[in-house]
Image 1 (spheres, rainbow, N blue to C red):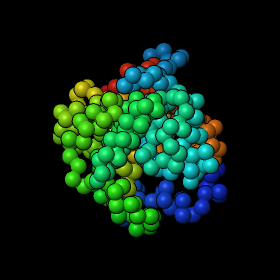
Image 2: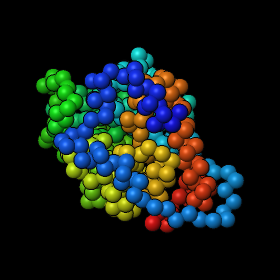
Image 3: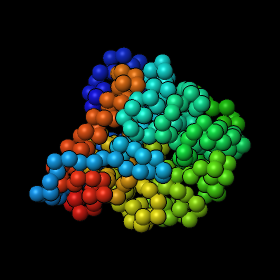
Image 4: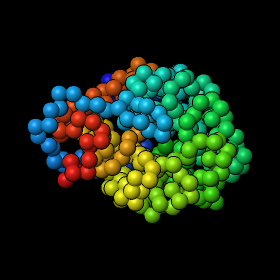
Length: 320
């Protein structure tokens, strides 16, 4: 199911407060509004006569063999979308040959995540023992990486959303620094990616501190409003990383052309957030699988028209 069709199918059954929670952003929602438009501004320079009778969207990412570079990003409380919550999301993700990044604020215990490649998303809490214990649990349960969210020393102001306050010991630690990368790696024994990077110098600092990957993200427009669109930040981060680690990107990707542009700008994979929630609400695990497969098929079609037979052939010269 195409992500936009999933949203339409699910819209009638999703309560209004849940809809606002999913769709809202921080401040005046300038960053939120610009997310998809920034990808749509990009233009392509297709190649011709390249025998694109078949294309291959598969890749290897930090040891996981995947059928698609379209991954599921971390979003909270999937139980709001479907009774089976993250268990259904994980099943649909695995069915599509993709990878799930499980939110710390999931509706289901991480031990309930079924077999299939997955990573844990982690915040650093004031009581860091909680964070480290969760990372160890994830490793024991089969996670293959930890994604440290770095752009939330405080929660963004989302006046239209509302939220229940967290218990004091579970508040995010505003004093967190680069040392958290090494601490999480030590606690879990897993590679640590840093999510929320929008600058090349930050990407380099994270790699120098031990990060195994970078996720270009502005938190779906839900943290600092007027933060730059990820489509505009990606190339600078890729240039700074210079092949030292994988670079992933999220934020406003809604079709295969968006994914093709992201890959051409240097991303190794992309992450979907809101579209997966709508697909989950529409049809559970089957909806998630259909959403990912539809976007992957859309990407494959775009690759054929652009003259790229595999992901390594999706190179920067394709983007004007």
